[in-house]
Image (cartoon, rainbow over all chains, first blue to last red; front, side):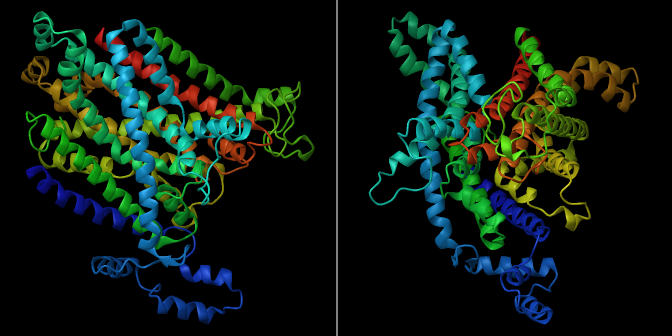
Length: 313
Length: 276
């Protein structure tokens, strides 16, 4: 509980600083809304543009516009998305859900496969070298390239799975999830396998494992009951550190597979000069990132009470 | 040891390819930038060993030129981030107090942020509004290097700080201080060599990270702009043509994989050498 209370102000401060930095960065991007209006309607005159700028406060200094926007946010005015012509929140929620489903599935699969591979590596040194090589390969594979290769194999050559996008009413949704989930899970699995192997090898050297074996506990019980739960704590740390980068890293996978998740939304918003949506998406991703990290930290403290408050262990 | 050697061999081969790009251009007598619409998607042949891309340019030649971009961006960004991170990490550990607190809070804050969306946001900044010329290959590269350094110093700084703290607590540092060595000399002669190995590991991982990040940004169209080839933007073009020329999407990714794996092997090798 103390951990949560200590972390919340940190999260709030980070969000405020991030929004300020992002606002300044957006001020440096090409084109403002008035010049976009000019592009879509060449009949507008210079006076019209000046009037538009004054109407929307675009002639005000950057900092004053930021304050007005931030106060609006605090009052619950999230504004509209220019690109989708909808309230920004109506665009953000479905995207967030899509990303969480994608990343959640990938993490579960990666963790199960990774721990299995890691256990194999820790118990059988010969398999360990193979797992090591596989982990190195998986970590070096750029995820977008893997995505393209999977599309070439399963969508173009074999034609078994769709190359991307979203299902129609008569298409099952899981078919559209397989390739993106596999893309993310493959890279993640490597990290879990490496850490699980290291943690298990370390745990198996501990005195309580020796005494369990000395009492005649069967090897499977030693592994499942004594070794794995203790090796789980560092894995949770890894999960905590990863949770955030996964949510934001889904951007690439979502772009490759044209999945309308948070990452793709943010990318499209930045590219389409939809600044309000881009800012909100960035802040939402940052918030989810930090909350996920906090949740994993709390779980870790709960599992291992030896950790002091505030430390990452 | 073997890992280190394997990694170095891979990286040396890629560096050689980058250096030999003009030679290859002379040899295959093709232009890596000029379109040749009659040669679009040409299959591999004697003139185009890996075939031609969607504008009829030689894929192998563009891979070689892409190696220049990827390696220069990766090395420059990682070395700058590593130098900055080492300096800041050492400073934080040596000075302690509020300098340490501020720097480490800043590092924590940067680590907590969603890196990739921020990179996308920053990469979309218009260089013209900062007074830089737009659309030149070197400004693209410089912009990416700066962005990667802004985020890249954190990991090195945390490592350097931890290593510096443990070196500063050793007896030989106390002995040196007792002998009246100046603090500047102490940091240069005693601390810096002591933290060199972990910093080297972090740096080679940073090179891998920078190469990967550059390729992602270029893939998304925010990094190196065509016609200048980079492994990332070659993949972006190839993805649009997966039906016409699937193999064109294989080679640039393989090059990225080799570069990143090479750096990973070097990092692993240095780390193991230390513990052995």
